[in-house]
Image (cartoon, rainbow, N blue to C red):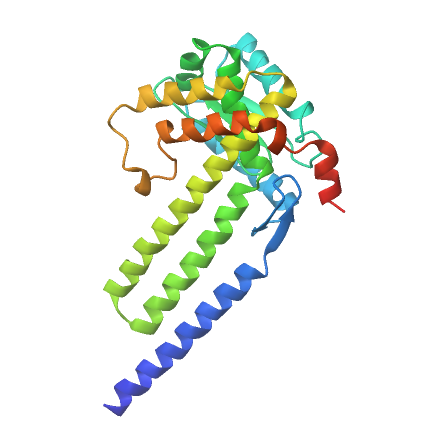
Length: 274
C-alpha cells in the first residue's frame, strides 16, 4: 500500500510541476498587438512567424495541387491583395505578404500561413468571381487579418498550454480515461478560440476593405457563397473552428454599420505602438 501511495504522490507532484510550467510559459508569452489593440499570448517572435510561413508554403502548394498556371488570374489576385495591404493599417507592419492561387478546383478554401503567405484555391475563387471583385477582396481581407492578428502564433501558444495540461493530467492520474477527457475538453476550448479569431478577421477585414475602397458587402456575398457550398454537410458550430456562415453574416453586417466608429486608422495604430 505504502509503495502505491508513494508512487501516486510522486506522480501528482510531477503532474503539478508540469501544469505549473505550462501555465507560467503561457502567461510569459504575453504580447501587445497594436493592430488589434489587444494583449495576446503568442509563442513565436515576428521573425519566427515569417520563417515558419516561408518554410511551410511549399508544402501547402504541393498539398493543394500546385500553383494555378494562369498569370492573368494570379496578377488580379496580387492586385487586389496588395491594394488591401498597401491602403490600410496592414501597410506599416513587418509581415511579408504574398498571394498565391492554388490549382485545386475541388477544395473551397482560403488560408493564411504565419508571417504573410496567403492562398486561395480555384474552387473558391471561381465561385467568388461570379459575385465580383469585392467578394474576392472580402476573402483576402479576412486572411490578411489572420496574419495581422497573429492568430497562428496565438493558436500555437494555446495548443502548447492545452497539451501541457493534458500531459500533466495523464501523469498525475495515471488514467487513460482522464487524459482522454482532458484532451476532448482542450480540443473544444481551442476550437472556441479559433471561432473568435475568425470573427475578428471578419470584423477587421471589413476595415481593410473600406480603407482600400472595396464594398464591404462583398464579404457578405462571400459568406453566402460559403453557406451554399457547405450545404448540410458541415458539423455543428460548437464543434467547428469556423462559425457557421449564416451566423457570421450577422456579425459582418453589424461591423459594416459600425465601421466608421470602430475601424482603427494608421494614427491610432501608431499611437498604440508607443
